[in-house]
Amino acid sequence: MSPPGKDPVPVTVAKVIGAVALVLVALAFGAGGACGAWVAVAGLWHGIKQPGTSSLDGFWVIGAVCAVVGLAGAGLLIWSIVLMFRKKLGE
Image (tube, rainbow, N blue to C red; front, side):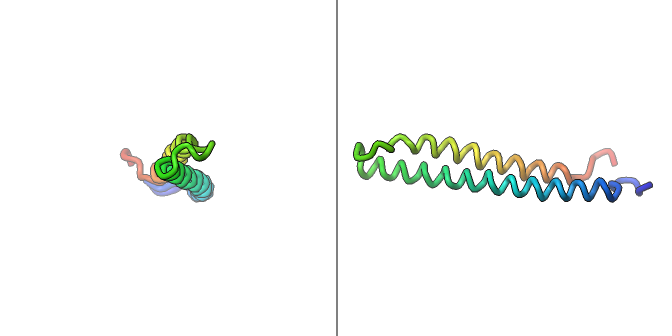
């Protein structure tokens, strides 16, 4: 039996493996969000400097949506890791 306030070793190992998997998924979401931010900024810059010269002028909206979803998803995944290892209040 484990001491009060501590998880058994198999549970801790499962949490660590889960945390590593969540970090990898968060990195993928973060990369997608960063790419979306790049597309949004580049699209806005192009639209301001040379309006009407490209058929891709409206793609900054898609980039902005990808940036918000990707970065918010990455943040939620990292927060879930913090909550997973946080000590419970009742212990």
